[in-house]
Amino acid sequence: MSHKVLILGAGFGGLELSSLLDNELGDEVEITLIDKNSGFVFGFSKFDLMLGQATLPEVVLSYSDMTKPGVNFRQETITAIDPANRAVTTDSNSYEADTVVVALGAEFDIAATPGFAESGHEFYSVPGAIAVKDVLADYKSGSLVIGILGQPFKCPPAPCEAAILLDEWFEQRGLRSDIDITLVSQWKVPIPPSPDGSKAIVEKFAERNINYITEQIITSLDPATSTANFKDGGSISYDLFLGIPVHRVPEVVRQSGLSENGWVPVDHTNLATKFPGVYAVGDVTSAPTPKAGVFAESAAAAVAEHLVAQIRGAGDPRPFDGQGACYVEFGDKMVGRMNANFFPGTKPTAPFTQPSREIAIEKADFVTERRRRWLGS
Ligand SMILES: Cc1cc2nc3c(=O)[nH]c(=O)nc-3n(C[C@H](O)[C@H](O)[C@H](O)COP(=O)(O)OP(=O)(O)OC[C@H]3O[C@@H](n4cnc5c(N)ncnc54)[C@H](O)[C@@H]3O)c2cc1C
Image 1 (cartoon, helix red, strand yellow):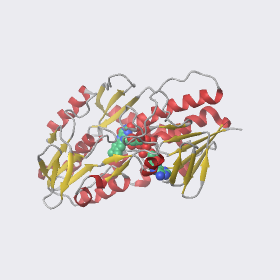
Image 2 (image 1 turned 120 degrees about the vertical axis):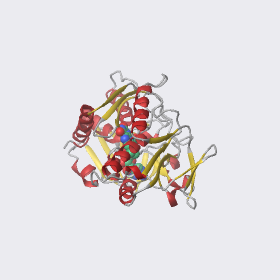
Image 3 (image 1 turned 30 degrees about the vertical axis):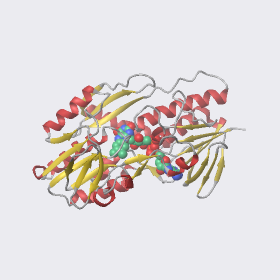
Image 4 (image 1 turned 90 degrees about the horizontal axis):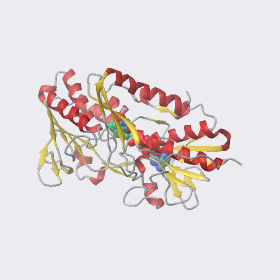
C-alpha cells in the first residue's frame, strides 16, 4: 500500500512539496493537496494588482491547470486538524494520512490595530491589493504613509519595494510632487541581515525623496484625526495609510493545538512538529527564517528529502538549509537580489547583488519555472 501524504495548503510550500514528492516517489506515495482557493498568487504579484499593471487572471496559477496525475488536488476549506490522529476535516470531506504537512501560511488580523479597518488599507491580500488599486486611482495629493503594524510579517523587503514602486507610479502620472511618501519601519535599516542591500534601499529612498522613519512601530490609527500612533509615543498624519497588517496563524491551526506563542514550533532540521508524522512548512511556523516564499520552498525541500528517506528506509537527508534568493524591486524595471542564509543556529547573512535588468529577467524566469514545476503545464 502506498504512503498517504496530506498537504494542507497549496501555496509556496505546499506546491513545492507536492511537486518534489510526486517527482521523486511517483506511485510509492498517494498525495492529496487541499486548498480553499482555486489558484495561487505569488506575493509579489500583489504589487502588479495594486498598481493596475496586471489583472488577477493574468497572475493567478490556477490549480485546474495542474497536469500532475500523482497529485490529487481538492478545492476545500479545512475546518479542523487533529494532529494526534493525523486526521483532517474539510467543508466537504474527512481525511486520514500517514503524513500530514501543514502549509497554511499566515492570515491577517486587521482588528488587532484599532482604527485600521476604518481608515487604512492593506495590499498584502489579493482582495486588498485590488481594492487599493481603486483607492490609488482617486488619490492625487497629500501624505501617503506606509506603516508596519506588527512582527513578524511576510517578505521583509516588501514595504520598501511598495514605497519605491508607488514613487515611480505617481511620478509617471505627474502627481509625485504633490504627494509625500513615508515609510515607517520598526528596524534601524531596511533589511538587517543585508548591510549592502539596506544601503542600496536607503540611497534609493534619498534619491527619490521617500521619507524613512526607523525604529517605530504603529499600534493604532485615529480615523477622526487621520493620525497613526507609534508604540513609543509620537505619531504621523496621513491622507492615505497603507498598512502591513498584524499576521497570525489561520484560526484552524490555532484551534488544532499545533501552535505555541502564535506560530507552529518545528524541529529546525526536518520541520517536524511535536506530533509524530505531522510537519509544518512556511509562514505558519516559527522556524528561524523570515516569512517568505523562498524559505517555505527550502523547508518543503527538507521535508521532501526526509520523507523520501523515511518511506524508502534509505538515504541521508540534508537538514533544512534556511536559504533563499529574495528579489527586491528598485523601480525602472530593475531588480536586486539578496542571497539570504538563515541556517538555523548561525548569524543570518544576505549578500546583495545590485539591481539590474538581468535580475529582473531572472525573477520572471523564477515565476515561469515554478509554474512549470508545480503545475506541470
Ligand atoms: C506584497 C508581498 C510581496 C512578497 N514578495 C515575496 C518575494 O519577492 N519573495 C518571496 O519569497 N516571498 C514573497 N512574499 C511572501 C510570500 O508570498 C509568502 O511568504 C509565501 O506565500 C508563504 O508560503 P506558504 O506556503 O507558507 O503560505 P501561502 O503561500 O500563503 O499558502 C497558504 C495556502 O493555504 C491556504 N489556506 C489557508 N487556510 C486554509 C484553509 N482553512 N483551508 C484551505 N486552505 C487554506 C491558502 O489559500 C493558501 O493558498 C511576498 C508577500 C507579499 C504580501
